[in-house]
Length: 250
Image (tube, rainbow, N blue to C red; front, side, top):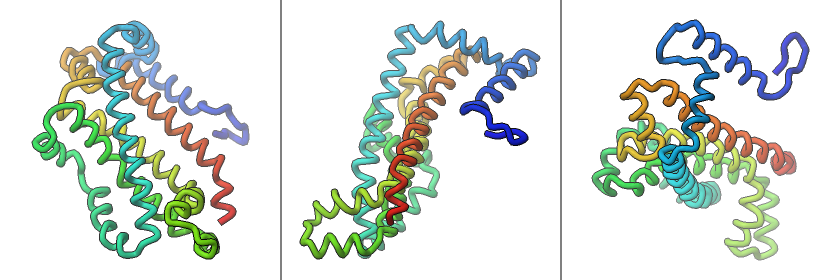
C-alpha cells in the first residue's frame, strides 16, 4: 500500500479500517456496531470458555474435512478434464452449473439425503469449494507446455508417473490459486451449513448472540472467523508466489 509515493508497512489497510471501525463505534451511530476495542476485549473474555472452544473445534473439523475432500477430489478431476477431451466435455457443463448456481438452495436436499448432522455440513462445505478447484486445475493442465507432455510420453511414463511428476507440478500455480479461492468459499459453506442444517459450532454462537442482541460477542466470533480465513488465504498466496517460477518455465 502506497500513499503519495510512501510505501506503508504490510497490514496498514487493515489498521486503517480498524481505526475507522473504532471511530464509528465510539460515535454511537448504531447499536449493532460496537467499538472495535470493546469487541477485542469481549473476544478475550469468551475465548477461554468451553462453549467457544467447542464451537471452534466443531467449525474447524467441518471446515478441514470439507476442504480436504474438495482438494482430494477436485485436483485429480480437474487434471483429468484438462488432459482428456471426452471427460472434459462430459463434466465441464456440470461444473459450470454448480459453480454459478446458488448452492444454498441445495441445502434442504442435502438435509433429506444425509440428515441433519455433521455429514451434511461437511458435504455442503465441500460443494462450496470443489468447483473452483476443479476449474483452476483444468486450466493449469491445459496451459502446460506440450513439450513436457511429449517428454513424458517419449520416456514411457505411466499415467500415474505423468500425473505426479509432470501435470501436477506444471499446473501447481493455478492449482494453488483455485485452492485459495476454494478455501474462501468453504468458509461461507461451513457457516451456512451450521446455520441451516444444524445449529452447531460458530453457527450456533451467531444464532445465540444475534437473538439476544449480544453484538460485542457476535462481532468477536466474526472477527475470529475472518482472521482464520484471511490467514489461510495469505499463506496460500505466499505459496503461490513461491512456486510462480513453474509458470515462468512453462
